[in-house]
Image (cartoon, rainbow, N blue to C red; front, side):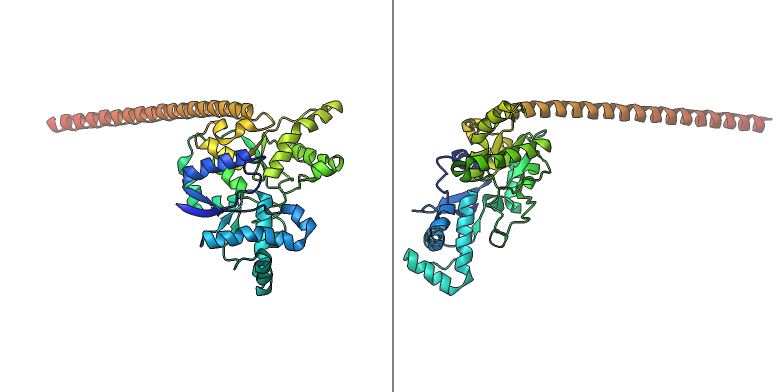
Length: 350
């Protein structure tokens, strides 16, 4: 079993509850043990950085220090993209110098050596062992489902801290979606910002950021958007209805693009019902599309089976024709040989 220290973050039991539910479901299925860091605290996310640089480093460092002491040797997994960036930035700062580590220790009043790495859930799932475990547990591939994999900005930037595989075109989520049979589309807004908390403070400027994400996903043929960030998910899922109302008022077509966590879709592929992985608590209706694509997949499978059967029949017919030709040729050769033998016998008799 693969074991990690788990930093759930403040959204785990509130706005990101379906992420927590689906993560727990999938982790249990594939043998990934997530041990919650005892007495963890809010990472501070962007609010702490706006208040104080020292606070932005110290808040996540305290939880990392507790993990280092209570769960030695375990890397820390932060499913929330905002939490991940806060913890990862604090870790990078601590690893820059002994002076930085001493400063952190003074602020949090605890020992801390920055030994453990900080990982996203996508990084955990990209290991060969986990992918093999996922493949082994898949019961129904999500064929016919076209997904726009949306990473957002917090997991990939700053590039020197997050060390993403590709800042503009990351592939971790895309590869997982292919693993469960879904089809990732190529689109331009993979790592664009959704506006984050600006949706509450300056909504007039921020809402078009969300609308453009939906527009680009739709323009590139996506049925849905898949993400791994609770704040991105909240902004997209909750505000789609508001954006649609404005579009209808302008005489434009509304969107019907459900949003999912990548763990929800992996759970579905493993045989879970939608409510088992939290899909039933989404704001925008998210079950109908899945049912329709499941029917599409069954029809496709039926058509493929029919095509294979027709191909097999064609091959069998061809083989039968070839066999008949061979038999006919052999019979003619045998008859000719018999005639030759008879002629030889008659010649000898004379």
